[in-house]
Amino acid sequence: MRPMKSLALVLMAAALFAGCQNESSSNSALEARVKKLEESNAKYAEALDFLQKVYTNQKQQAAAQKEAQEQSEPPDDAVFAVDIANDLANHQVEGPNSATVTVVEAWDFA
Image 1 (cartoon, rainbow, N blue to C red):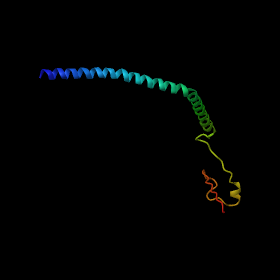
Image 2: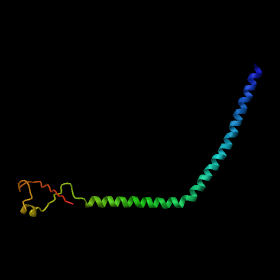
Image 3: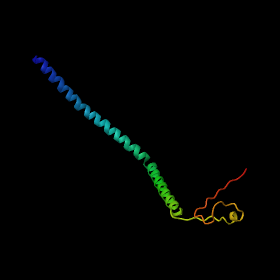
Image 4: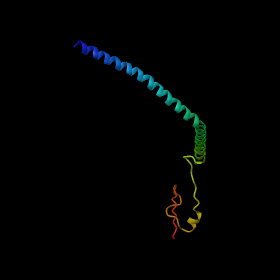
């Protein structure tokens, strides 16, 4: 039984030693991957900067367009007038002249 325990201890020590060796090789592999990513980033840095400038410019233009649209819209309490004098003269109006709301219907015969 004693040789079995010593064999198990030797195997466990070998596994730990192999695991420690594996860390250094994976560490160097990790460093190689980081270096490759840094090179790739440096290669495309100018293009990424240009795209960032374009994106920022587009966002500014969209904000300016939205602001211009909001300024050009009439206020919520706006009142619009429709000239219906010709329609009144031609008797094309239904309802009383003192109505507060005028509904305008339009159609075209093709």
